[in-house]
Structure formats: structure tokens, C-alpha cells
Image (cartoon, rainbow, N blue to C red; front, side, top):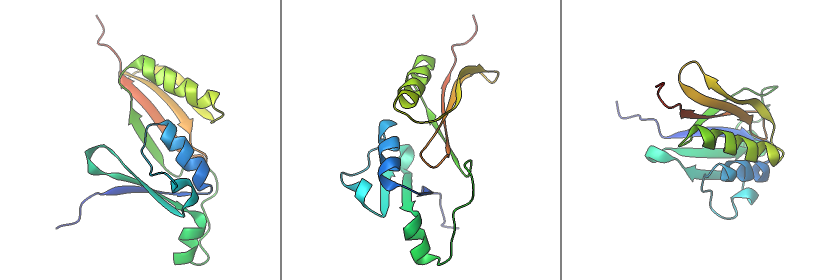
Length: 133
């Protein structure tokens, strides 16, 4: 089989808002992406994040309607340190994005937090906790 995982696609209601959110998380969308119906940013490991407006999806699938509510998808971003989880979460919430779960030390050994993108998709922020001494 030659099929291989290549990209993660999200349908967005507001391209400019979504590009701005994901740029704050360090993704490199090309200049002008916020004005396009489709945008792509490279991810580590050769994957890509694809954003398409609802109008773009409807042009290929007439009658398509977005699912109701958030939680349709979740992305997880690894931070270098537990302190970075706190800082990134604080910066995003401070910029007006909706926090899902504030930073906490998870039982599985990670500092963890959840913030929501402009369409309500969860974006998990995590970093390994130092080993117990």
C-alpha cells in the first residue's frame, strides 16, 4: 500500500482568526493566508496543517453544514518545559482565546492545558514533568 498520513485538515469559519491563532502557536502560514479560502502550514515530521473555509468546503460538497458545537477535532502541541505550557496558555487566554482547562499536572506525568481555537476545537498543550526525585 502506498497511502501515507500527510496532513491534518480543519474546516474553519473565519480564516483570518484561525491563521492568527495558529501563528501564535508558532505555525508558519505564508503571508496573505488569512485572505485565502485554503491555507497550509508545515508541521514537524513533514506533515501539514490544512485550513479550509466553510465556503470552500460547500463549493465541493453543496449542502454541507458544519457539525454543531466544538470538540470536532483536537490537536496536541508539545512544549519544551512545564513552564512553557503555563506561559503559552496564559498568552493565548490573555489574547482573548477561550481556555478549556487551565494548566495542571496530569497523573500520566505531563503538565497539561487545553485552549480552544476560534472554532471551538481543543488544542492541548503539554510537556513532560521532571521525574520525581
